[in-house]
Image (cartoon, rainbow, N blue to C red; front, side, top):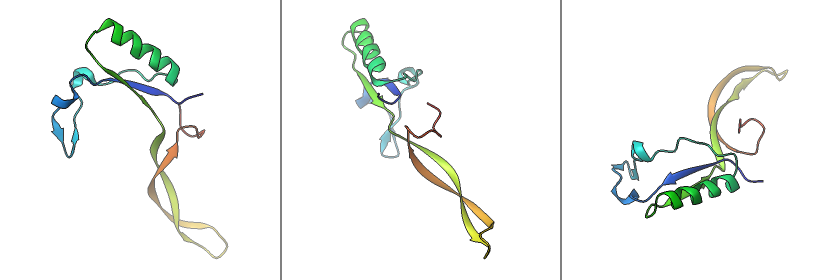
Length: 100
């Protein structure tokens, strides 16, 4: 089974405005649906391509997600956490904490 996917119309991607070394997706081309798996997304991409000749639709499978966790910074001799801090972490989408 595959992970959730997004479909993006990339027919005019070379004309998207530059943004800090990347390209900003035009609002009219931004994805609005999170497909439950790759098979469903590919079927929808084929439907969109048939409905809009000359356009190109890319399927992006979600592999990782970034989240913030709390990490102990100070621990007592008995092991009790005295102080912690937030830390960004990448998680695999298949992990149960990711709500897909």
